[in-house]
Image 1: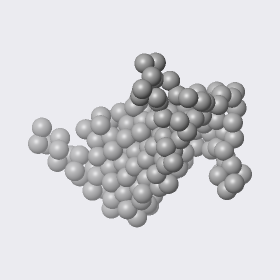
Image 2: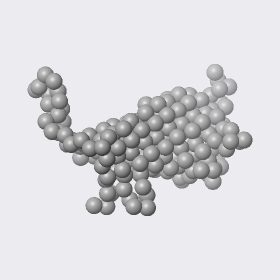
Image 3: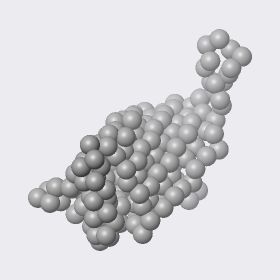
Image 4: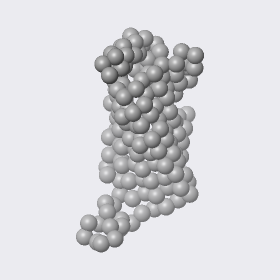
Length: 169
């Protein structure tokens, strides 16, 4: 048990020292997990079990993450929770992220926006060039569930097969 903890400590230390191939390519980051493995052949870092990652103001929690170092991508699997720098909280089953924890693609998403609005969708894809996010099979509301009602449904909601969030406007 002690050897395993020391091994994990050295792996984290190596990741910090090798900044150019670090997990998140950021000056300030933190990674913790039950197990962390580096595969030099595939050039990946895999963290399994209660994974917590912090990069700048972004935070990620998941059951498992795989960092593809050459591609500068992170795949988060199982009970994914992402806190972004704008105060939004993303819940998902799976997420493909940039190494800075910016979203590329996310599956089975529940989103609590910083203004307490809520979005649920089957998937979301970020299109960086156009500064937008495209949601599929989406439901949106800014109502909270009605605590007085027995069925606890929201007062109103919008549904669409596809919705686009233009970040600048």
